Image (cartoon, rainbow, N blue to C red; front, top):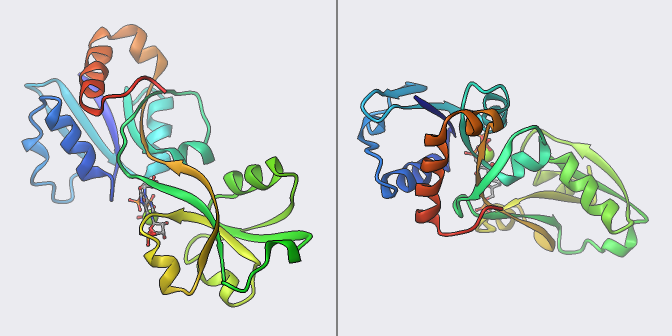
Length: 209
Ligand code: PRT
Ligand code: MG
């Protein structure tokens, strides 16, 4: 039995599509209801639907052999799992955004609101810019509007959320996509896991990252 932890939510559908394209019968997940564990004895597969940061936790502890999770989450929660494939889904980017009148050069020590303190800190440090991070749990977009911070670091996909809140992108930080991660002991113990990864790689068509 191979266990795969999937990020519940917006990247779930595309992940299931990739698995179906790779030849797995995913119909057992069609009627999800409130189920969080799906077992298919015929294909010897088990799926866990969990919150994004927990995907890495299940894989690290070897409860899941494989996991699918955004690179944003992996960056923020580094751990002892192997990154096997870029699945090229869940595409978005990290950007620095603020109100249009914001001038980055006005602020010697920038105050930045974000749900992603590590990526924000590393980005400004890499540019030798002095930064104060204000960790926010959500609705980050309002922070520069109401004057809590000078700008934000957040995920941007279509840009609609920024526009709706009167913000513009000042700088892009890095591309974000969903990755296939693996437990290293699982890979050594069960050769069928590598076979499964090869099948997924044939669908997404890229080299190991
Ligand atoms: O939202 P929730 O708390 O339920 O869970 P989550 O954020 O952990 O999961 P989910 O399903 O929202 O996101 C899962 C993964 O999808 C993330 O880890 C990213 O890798 C990827 N992804 C792709 C996105 C987006 N696109 C995205 N647009 N994650 C979040 N967003 C949010 C973003 O935070 C911002 O608020 O959408 C808003 C911006 O979208 P646009 O289109 O208006 O620019
Ligand atoms: Mg979300």
